[in-house]
Length: 236
Image 1: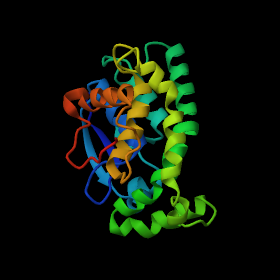
Image 2: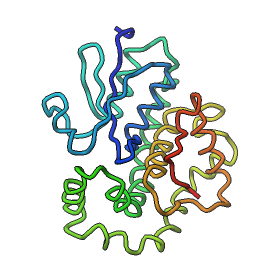
Image 3: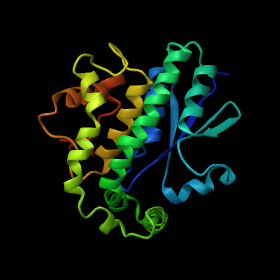
Image 4: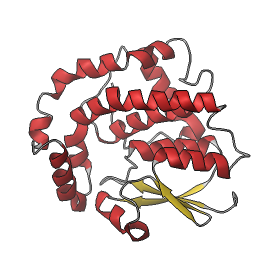
């Protein structure tokens, strides 16, 4: 079964770059396990057309007659279906701790990134996706326009940078969140920064933030420079 091809549906923006933090988690997970995959680029308005509308979000994978979404479900599936590849989790305990890290990271960091960059996502989206994106995201923020929601974003940068303190502390003593080598916790955080580097018109990090910037350089260089792209925007 593991020899059958994997198809990965990826959200892309107008310039064709993969720009979903959740897709990037799975891109890194596939590379970590040495799994080759076929990339299927889609936009926001294409997602309901995939596999007869079975899923509402990406990433979506197809493999050996199985299709699924949700990045954690996919990561678990890759572990089960490709046991000969490098494990994503060294133990059940590590998986549980990474799951906790994900919960914290979504609440304390990604929520702030959304506040800073949701208008940038809109501006970078494919033309045919813009109306859908504005309608759904403005509904999520209770009818506030994207422009009004992000109007004071420069004032919000210090809070974002402070929220990264736990990562910064860890990366001051180890090259990766996983220690000497990256694990799925790194891919969760790197995925978010890959998303930001795809669309940001305001760099999120201070140039003096060397622990985080060194880690990002190392993370973007992983797996033959998979995370490098001339279309990326500065992060500091």
